[in-house]
Amino acid sequence: MVRGIYTGCMGMLVQMAKLNVIANNIANVDTPGYKKDSTSFKTFNPVLIHRIGGRPYVRLKDRVKAIPIGKMETGVVVDRITTNFTEGNYIHTNSSLDFALKGDGFFTIRGADGIYKYTRDGRFSLDSNGMLVTKAGEEVLSITGKPIRIGGEFTVDEQGYVYVNGKVTNKLMISRFQNNTGLRKIGDNYFIPTPQSGPPLYDNQTKVMQYTVEGSNVNAVRQMVKMIEAQRAYEINGRVVSTEDQMLDKAVNNILR
Image 1 (tube, rainbow, N blue to C red):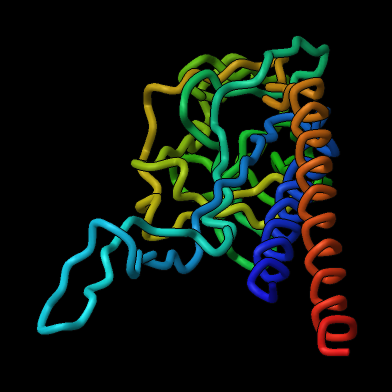
Image 2: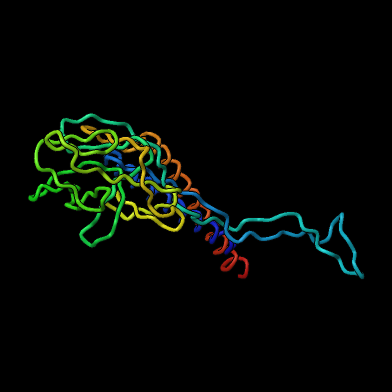
């Protein structure tokens, strides 16, 4: 009976984790460049089940040998949370400081703490010194690893070259990774590399689109359906725990009496 309580509780925990991920996806349905997450699970501590007695069975030196009949899982746990990097819809804007990427690349950002970050969110602005920065005021980097200064009327072509007053002055640093799913989210729509993603590489295949932003790749309707499914699964596991608790109560207080 206690095993049933543990199994039901583990089911509730994984469904709670799934609900948290879905809620975060729905909260970012209108966040430009946001990439949705999904949760995967794995079985926990599978136990090999044996048949003892009955037929067929094997006698070995007058002792009955247990016959293995398969494994039984005792519960599930969260395996990992995976980010889906499919492109969102592209939305035309009237701002020359809005950019989107067509391909697998990322804008390269340097935070105030000196950490290099990567994002698909191209809603930029200019600071008081004319530097191209994110909405949070962090530097958008060029291929030289330095901030990009805009000193007049400017345009950016598909290769990321920055033209100021008709002359090329810089180029956006677009980075890519060998394995995007290995990137780690750190909040504020930023990613950082991990050993699984590999180091950042220069990307000359991704196209830059000015006057455009990439929408979130979250489908709100599908996420709502998944939320309902997770809620129902959570409730079912809760009933399992409640039933097991009632059976345990009867076994302890009624049967022994």
